[in-house]
Image (cartoon, rainbow, N blue to C red; front, side, top):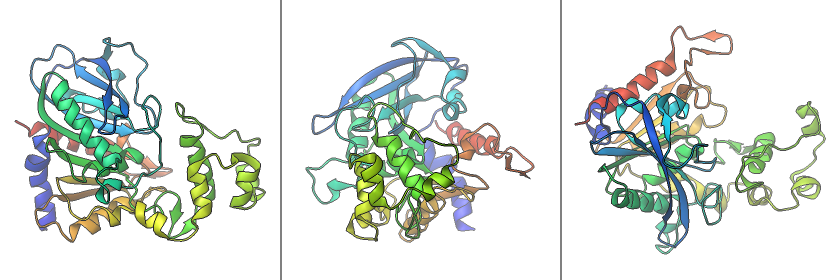
Length: 357
């Protein structure tokens, strides 16, 4: 009962230091920046600010490998209803929205490393998603007008992973993080392995998706419709490189090199990296998530052991991967939930915002 009561307190106090309610916001203006990181690498960043706004507002940040830019001209206005769908539900709450390409992807400089370990914990000269998030927040606070000096970060799936990374040694201005459908351990139960069993089709297609091209999300050009038959004839992991990838996709090479739970996977595991909630964290997950069912629950349970400051929270629902971000989420296949659970969840996120001063 304690945690359920504290969840309410969390909604109206801890997390709400980030948010501000605004009304009458009908459009946002676009600006883009190349934000320098501590090692000189610059990351492409899209900032959407409410047009005509005069009140200082907080940032709501999403860091992604899937492409941050929107197809509208610099300084032009984008109508609220044209925002990415998940952000559309929060557009009236009063945010400066920030979308950033993580290093090595799309318009950002540097090299991409899938699920980059948090290197700076062992070597302060190293960079990772945690340090990049810190540097991005620091630059935004100092160089973007009309902000109130506060930021929150969230995302689904890989974007949730970067939100969790940002909670490690966070910038003082980062007040809350919400990793949603975020992977925690890629060998024990998320994405590529389920309790050590390699998901061949997912690993094959996802590594191609994010590593085949820097500025595109690539679908592998399968020669036939029946993929079950195609995978049966594929052969071993070694055959994949000989026939198709030619050792040019680093993630696939790692899959082949590390079939066991060795130091490679252990170094990536957030269970070995995040030990306390250094700021309020709201995990979100779905019971029918075929990709990251374990991640939110594992991380919540892990942090709960040391959550003396009551910063660690979770919401689970009858959802598949990220389904709560859709329009309704009122069913799963032929199973009718009896209500629009996405509407409920997104209203809950709005309530978090409305409690802000």
